[in-house]
Each structure stands twice: as C-alpha cells, then as structure tokens.
Amino acid sequence: MNSLERSLIRKAGYDHGWEVVVEESPEQVILASALHGTRARVTAVSGGTGWEVALSSGILTDELVRLTPAAGQSNGGFRAVSEGRLGQLLHQAALIARTLPDEPFHRYAKAVAEELAAAGPTSATEVERMVRQRVGQNIYRESLMDYWGGACAVTGIAIPEVLRASHARPWAECATDAERLNVFNGFLLCAHLDALFDRHLMSFNEVGEAVFAPKIDLSTRTTLGLGPHIRLRWIRDKHLPFLDYHRTRFANMSNITA
Image (cartoon, rainbow, N blue to C red):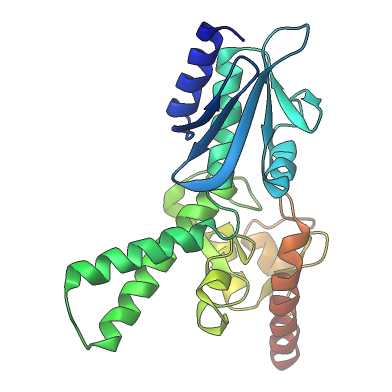
C-alpha cells in the first residue's frame, strides 16, 4: 500500500471508532481503540481493489458475519471495495466490539470509580449502591442498543423511547457486575414485550421462538399485536445459559398462575 492508501485507512479508523494506529507499514495498518480491546488489521486486496479487514476477536468476527452477510470474506476477514465500505465495516465492528464481554464491565468500573472519586469520602453505602446501579443500567442499555442496532430484538422497531433493556437473569440475582452487564444476559425489547419478559409471562426457547404463560392466551396476544410465530431476530449460543435461567423462572411462574 502506498502512503495515500494508508492515510485513507487511518482516517477511516479515526472517524469510525479506531482512533489508535498500533502499526503501519507498506503491508498493513493495525488499528485499535481506547474504548475496546479489539484490533483491526487492514491490508490491501491482493491483485484487486480495496482492502481486507481481519479482527483479533473471534466472537466479533462471528457477529460481523451476521451483520454483514454480503461482505466478501477472505482468509477469515472482510473485504471492503471502497473507502465508504471500509468506514461502514469499521463502524459496525467498533459498535459491536464495545458490547462484547467484558467491555461493558470495564466501562462501568471506570465510570463508577470516577463518580465515587468526584463525590469525595463517604460512608453512605446506599449512595454507592445507587451510583453503581444507575451507571450499570445506563451502560447496559447503551450496550444493548449497540448490539441490537438500536432496534427491538423481536419486532425491529427502532424508536429508542419505547425500547427497554431487559435482563434474563435479574440485576439483583447476578453473581457479579460482569454478569449483570453481559450483553447476552437479556434483550432490547419494546415496552410491552419487556413487561411480559420481566414478569416471566413470556420467554424464548433455544431457537429464539417466543413462549407465553397460559394467562397470555391467543386473544390477549392478538390484542397486543403479537402474531402466532414471533421470535428473536437472532440468537447466539452465549444467550442460552441466561435464557435457561429465565425459562426456569417462567415455568415456575406459569405453574403458579395457570
């Protein structure tokens, strides 16, 4: 790659969530960010036009395959045939990189430490608890918005005001803050779906199909605008342990209310 091509890569990285240049040579440019731990290796397409982008995270690579199925793949990376496409690819990768375990937890720990330091010495454990919960819930919602592309995990509705960050394993029942903030421990849902999911009146099976408690019968579902075959837009293996926990509670609640 010549100096102009490397300059275009640096600019695309800076503009789209990869503000750090780790390495630059005629063969490659390696990009990183202070906001996540992934690196992106950008090389020229051999004998062709554009660039190939390879990511250091296998989880992120799998997620990007889902988001960009039309992207030409080569040697485990992604092909960008233009500067605009390179920017789009890096932007999508940066958004998802910020959501994957344990990136939300790292942001949370830093934000909590900064807020508590700014508050000064205090022995009020309730104040600290409220700070941790508020910061954590904000970061969790932000992470789910990034992961689900700002749209409901079921309906695809992209109106932020009606979207809720739903936990499969509730905040208070998680063993660690990292578990509370894990982007796979829940879904971004419209308010009515969040209410059903939160109260264990609805859950999802292993392939992402919605299941309902007996009291949410077909008539009620029709009134709520819920079709007979609603399902998650996608589901990953990392969702399943959290969904297993939620379905156990769902089954217990269904038995009580049936």
